Amino acid sequence: METGKKLNSQERMLAIVEKLVESPVEGMSNKALARELGTLEANVCRDLKILEGRGWIERPAGGKWRMSAKFGGFAGTIIKGFQSAKLRLTEDEARYASEMQ
Image (cartoon, rainbow, N blue to C red; front, top):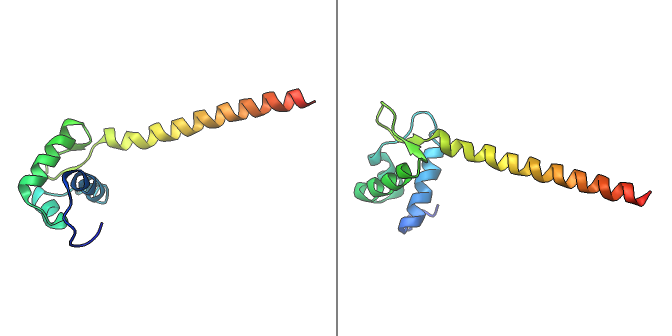
Protein backbone atom coordinates (compact mmCIF):
# COMPACT_ATOMS: atom_id res chain seq x y z
CA MET A 1 0.00 0.00 0.00
CA GLU A 2 1.38 3.41 -0.95
CA THR A 3 2.14 5.62 2.02
CA GLY A 4 0.16 8.85 2.11
CA LYS A 5 -2.20 7.83 -0.69
CA LYS A 6 -5.87 8.40 0.07
CA LEU A 7 -7.69 5.11 -0.40
CA ASN A 8 -11.13 4.88 -1.96
CA SER A 9 -13.68 2.71 -0.17
CA GLN A 10 -12.90 -0.44 -2.15
CA GLU A 11 -9.15 -0.07 -1.63
CA ARG A 12 -9.71 0.64 2.06
CA MET A 13 -11.74 -2.56 2.52
CA LEU A 14 -9.02 -4.61 0.85
CA ALA A 15 -6.40 -2.89 3.01
CA ILE A 16 -8.45 -3.78 6.12
CA VAL A 17 -8.47 -7.43 5.04
CA GLU A 18 -4.70 -7.32 4.51
CA LYS A 19 -4.13 -5.74 7.93
CA LEU A 20 -6.36 -8.27 9.69
CA VAL A 21 -4.65 -11.17 7.91
CA GLU A 22 -1.40 -9.91 9.45
CA SER A 23 -2.98 -10.11 12.94
CA PRO A 24 -4.77 -13.47 12.88
CA VAL A 25 -4.92 -14.09 16.62
CA GLU A 26 -4.74 -10.72 18.35
CA GLY A 27 -6.85 -8.86 15.80
CA MET A 28 -7.09 -5.07 15.54
CA SER A 29 -9.35 -2.38 16.93
CA ASN A 30 -11.28 0.15 14.86
CA LYS A 31 -8.94 2.86 16.10
CA ALA A 32 -5.78 0.94 15.17
CA LEU A 33 -7.13 0.15 11.70
CA ALA A 34 -8.07 3.79 11.13
CA ARG A 35 -4.61 4.92 12.23
CA GLU A 36 -2.86 2.34 10.02
CA LEU A 37 -4.95 3.29 6.99
CA GLY A 38 -4.89 7.03 7.58
CA THR A 39 -8.66 7.34 7.58
CA LEU A 40 -11.52 8.12 9.94
CA GLU A 41 -12.86 5.56 12.39
CA ALA A 42 -16.33 6.13 10.88
CA ASN A 43 -15.02 4.88 7.53
CA VAL A 44 -13.46 1.82 9.14
CA CYS A 45 -16.66 1.09 11.11
CA ARG A 46 -18.71 1.20 7.91
CA ASP A 47 -16.27 -1.11 6.11
CA LEU A 48 -16.09 -3.54 9.03
CA LYS A 49 -19.88 -3.79 9.11
CA ILE A 50 -19.87 -4.83 5.44
CA LEU A 51 -17.09 -7.39 5.97
CA GLU A 52 -18.86 -8.75 9.05
CA GLY A 53 -22.09 -9.03 7.07
CA ARG A 54 -20.29 -11.21 4.51
CA GLY A 55 -18.98 -13.39 7.33
CA TRP A 56 -15.34 -12.56 6.49
CA ILE A 57 -14.48 -11.06 9.89
CA GLU A 58 -15.52 -11.58 13.47
CA ARG A 59 -15.23 -9.77 16.76
CA PRO A 60 -14.66 -12.27 19.55
CA ALA A 61 -15.07 -11.50 23.25
CA GLY A 62 -11.80 -9.51 23.31
CA GLY A 63 -13.39 -6.85 21.17
CA LYS A 64 -10.79 -6.68 18.39
CA TRP A 65 -11.59 -7.63 14.82
CA ARG A 66 -9.98 -10.60 13.12
CA MET A 67 -10.53 -12.73 10.04
CA SER A 68 -13.19 -15.42 10.41
CA ALA A 69 -12.96 -19.15 9.86
CA LYS A 70 -15.11 -18.65 6.75
CA PHE A 71 -12.42 -16.44 5.25
CA GLY A 72 -9.75 -18.99 6.17
CA GLY A 73 -11.80 -21.64 4.38
CA PHE A 74 -11.30 -19.85 1.06
CA ALA A 75 -7.75 -21.21 0.87
CA GLY A 76 -9.06 -24.76 1.26
CA THR A 77 -11.60 -24.20 -1.50
CA ILE A 78 -8.87 -22.94 -3.83
CA ILE A 79 -6.64 -25.95 -3.08
CA LYS A 80 -9.55 -28.34 -3.74
CA GLY A 81 -10.08 -26.63 -7.09
CA PHE A 82 -6.43 -27.15 -8.02
CA GLN A 83 -6.55 -30.79 -6.91
CA SER A 84 -9.67 -31.40 -8.97
CA ALA A 85 -8.12 -29.76 -12.03
CA LYS A 86 -4.94 -31.80 -11.56
CA LEU A 87 -6.96 -35.03 -11.34
CA ARG A 88 -8.87 -34.19 -14.54
CA LEU A 89 -5.61 -33.37 -16.31
CA THR A 90 -4.02 -36.63 -15.14
CA GLU A 91 -7.07 -38.58 -16.37
CA ASP A 92 -6.95 -36.81 -19.75
CA GLU A 93 -3.22 -37.47 -20.03
CA ALA A 94 -3.75 -41.18 -19.32
CA ARG A 95 -6.54 -41.37 -21.89
CA TYR A 96 -4.42 -39.69 -24.55
CA ALA A 97 -1.39 -41.83 -23.69
CA SER A 98 -3.44 -45.04 -24.03
CA GLU A 99 -4.60 -43.96 -27.50
CA MET A 100 -1.02 -43.40 -28.61
CA GLN A 101 -0.10 -47.06 -28.16
